[in-house]
Amino acid sequence: MALDLGRGANPKGYMVEEIWQELAKAKYMEWEHESTKRSWELQTLKYELICKISELEGFLDEIPRSNLEQLEALDRVFRIAAEADLPTDVPDYLCCKITLDIFRDPVIAPSGLTYEREVLLDHLEKVGKFDPITREPLSQSQLVSNLAIKEAVQAFLDEYGWAYKTD
Image (cartoon, rainbow, N blue to C red; front, side):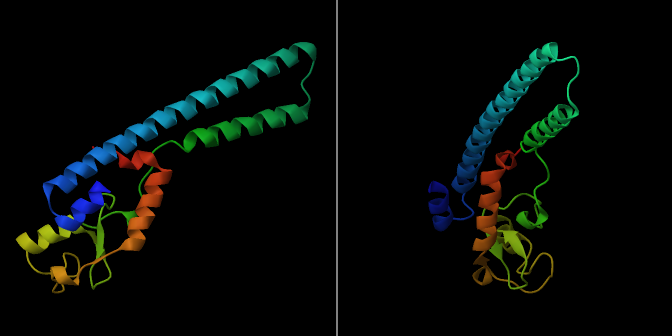
């Protein structure tokens, strides 16, 4: 809420950046904690299952083929579950064309391209009043918040907390 209020008052203000940095750090730490917890739970469960299977092997001379196939399937499930917490690349459509960072406050220009608001405003002020990619004339009043991308970014961050990492 503080981030949205800061953006409304002064989208280029240093407080907006500081709020984003602190929010991102807290969200990343929350994801890291949950990821470690999930990893520990998976490893514990896998260990317990292997122990149970080892106990069963002592009673049987030969493990039935169906049980071996189930063990292989279980191993695949554990690998897939572990991979869900591994960082990957953020999709390009969720990243600014200038900074290549995930969007925080995306705006769409008349050209149809989406940029990070603060970066584009800085470009318009320091470099010139034109679209940095298409070179078409552009003014601040032509920029519109890209709510669809903003929601997509939030959904992505909710699903993949590792993407909050900023350094």
